[in-house]
Amino acid sequence: MSELVRLTDVTKVYQGGITGALNGVSASIERGEFTAIMGPSGSGKSTMLNLVAGLDRPTSGTITVGGTDLAKLSEAGLARFRRDHIGFVFQFFYLLPNLTALENVLIPAQLKGNSATVRARGLLDQLGIKEAADRYPARLSGGQQQRVAIARALINEPTLLLADEPTGALDTHSGEQVMELLGRLHGDGQTILLVTHDAKLATRNAARVISVMDGKIVDDARLETTERSAAEVIRVRGEELKR
Ligand SMILES: Nc1ncnc2c1ncn2[C@@H]1O[C@H](COP(=O)(O)OP(=O)(O)OP(=O)(O)O)[C@@H](O)[C@H]1O
Ligand SMILES: [Mg+2]
Image (tube, rainbow, N blue to C red; front, side, top):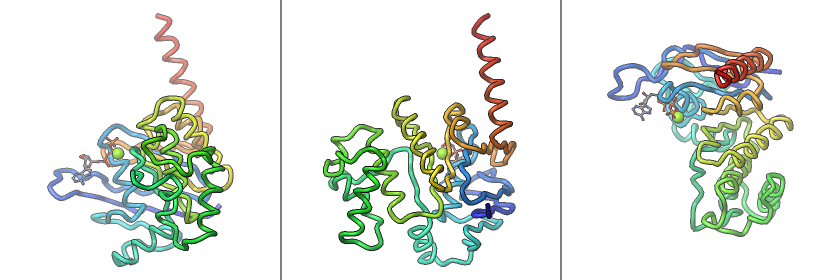
């Protein structure tokens, strides 16, 4: 594997913020990795994702994606970088209500026309919602809407798929389906950086869990140790329940 993302001593202080949202974060993400970022509310998870996506700029430190130093890109360059390399999935889908599912998927497509439409329909099929292509978002369940949003994130074959609490607005079953889907995409080679609150979903699907607290990385666990700690949590909870 080769490195895809590198954060070096990244700090983000928002205007008016007393403490940094991120405080000296360094991390490296390999191509093909499925990494979950976990941590309490306000710990800096979304900030980290937004910086890697080039949606915002750090106060200090460097972020490279595929060897490109994002600080060296102009605003237009960043927009191009996002379009060419980043797929972003949000908690609340953000589909345009007056466009069909298919039309939503096609919004970021660089080359319009027949081949993009074929690819978009293929993605909806792959994500298990072929029949939803010509429906409007209001007529789709939350899980279906999120899968449309994932198809939209994938239409330009992004180098990196970022997902910020993609299951946060879904019921348990739809959430599991979306996570399984991300797992399958990872199986096909997609690099994924996922923010989630759900330890069970994270440890079941991601091979690496980075824990963030007060804007710092406090733990970085590869699968085996993660599985062990998850098993430990389940064991302890089980014993608590027995009492
Ligand atoms: N645009 C902003 N302006 C000012 N402060 C912000 C902004 N965005 C985030 N913050 C602050 O930065 C810190 C980190 O926020 P962030 O959204 O990254 O946390 P998070 O880990 O994603 O939390 P959650 O789990 O609630 O989504 C918080 O203290 C938050 O209030
Ligand atoms: Mg967040």
